[in-house]
Length: 116
Image (cartoon, rainbow, N blue to C red; front, side):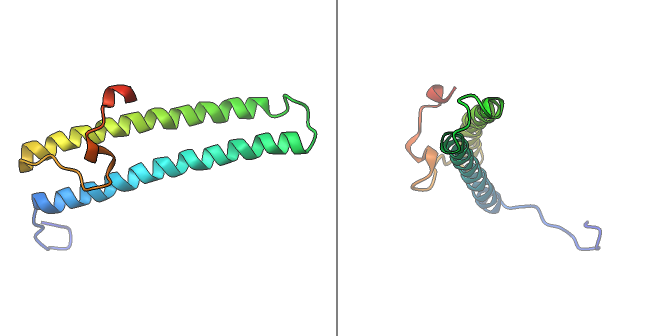
């Protein structure tokens, strides 16, 4: 029973699948957006260094840190791909189906070994 006195019903498998699909897609999109934003930032930093006639190593530490952060996001993408694959297995176990909607990254059964 919830704090407000209303009896809560559990989530149906279909609702759980829809919510997980929605949140997984949002997480994948957010990761891609973060990678794109960091790529744009990196390009802008290098252009600014060049266009302002700054020395060739001005801001080098910031560039190194940004590329390290970028690599971390790429690694996070590999982990998220593994989460997606594991959720497909759970979907198969619970619902008897292993299928991603058309256009989804795992809809083509990508080989995750390449992502490791």
